Image 1 (tube, helix red, strand yellow):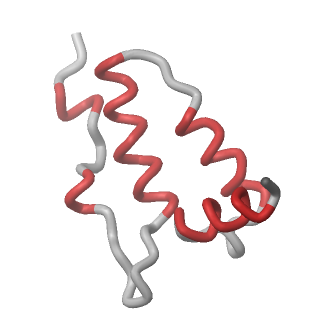
Image 2 (image 1 turned 135 degrees about the vertical axis):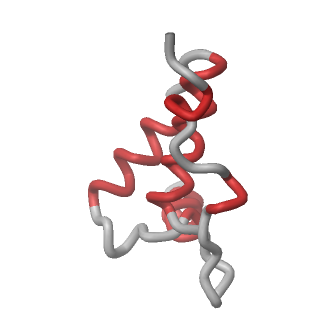
Image 3 (image 1 turned 180 degrees about the vertical axis):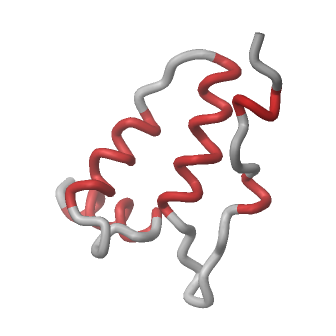
Length: 73
């Protein structure tokens, strides 16, 4: 049986926030995927990861992903 430490490889409090206020996409995904493992399936981390992988340099923070998505609405 998996332990909590096996499931959660990064805590949200350990996710970096850059000087410009941006949140690290990769670290946020690592933290959120641990929570999803604990509480069930969710498509949100998968959608964020797909967007990030489409252009890692352009989408290195969550804010950039949200701004890009908002511009298409």
